[in-house]
Image 1 (cartoon, rainbow, N blue to C red):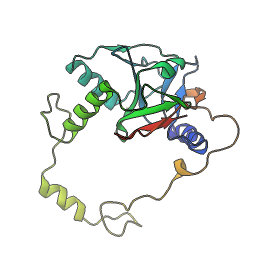
Image 2: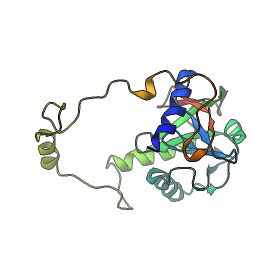
Image 3: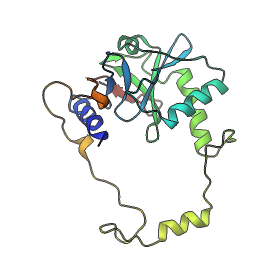
Length: 212
């Protein structure tokens, strides 16, 4: 499926000692991570690649843009060359699994002071407070599940083989993304775009990533 190329660029990044990869579009501009959208901050302005058909039209991306405007953070969607990632004050990824994850370095070039920046911090805290129900959901993005229903769903027998009769599968063991990637040049990214190995790492004060 369409995730195969994303897995390949992730594997290539991991095999080279990074945590995540950034893909470029056919024109050489920043597209997205292997499974996330990419944001950067420069001079107090939040920047993200314009949707040009090479990246995910992410729900979390849209949420971050909405929260940024709520927090009166200037936002700009524009074409972003690879070099802008190196000189950005802050860089972070966002997605359903990644939520809001800051990047510490890109191609071994430290981003800012190597820690979660102030704008990333505001957006991360606002996003997490919203999805955890700790603050008002002003935009109707949450679906609340009654506790009794949630408990019943966890106990309901599941007919799918190999899950031990529970509705929740056991934790996955290391999958394709954790295995060493192929040797040679980076694999092509989704939508026929070449891959960039741009990698991010975790910072001491947050869950951060180091990008190849």
